[in-house]
Length: 233
Image (cartoon, rainbow, N blue to C red):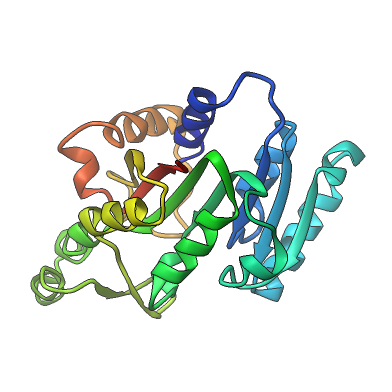
């Protein structure tokens, strides 16, 4: 996903431009820190106190110049209008958040509002058109059959959450003034790997295969996750 995001940023903004980045639901700050290290000014929004503590610990270990380029705000992403003015950001990330939001449209509209004209919106969502794959490949035939007709699923944390379908999100992005510019699949081959699986010796080859599949039909259409990139008109 980081490679995909870098590709979209490089194709949209001049080389060397320092961008204003908002990362909503930043988690432990993986993408936010990566972009701060690249020279961008990053604001991370996160609701979970444990994740915020982890992000702050990781940030504290960075050089002063990087620490100065990143700030952390506690919030759930639905109050962007309270914290930020319209057009405040060139890039807005919202990765792994929509599956926990029952009605995502207001959240997405708020994110579009704080984007500058020409800004990039990066979403990572659960692919509602591929929900049957994980249970099916695991031999859970009852779960696979049920998944064909639903966008609700139980994640690895044991929570009942929701998935999104590409056509519906494409319409939503057009409606909020940030139409879809590009989309990718994420975790095409590796979704069934256990969370505690050791990294393989051929990790770079694995990533190359995932990267190729994530941008190639028909493989990207059955990825566990979808990475959608919209551009603010």
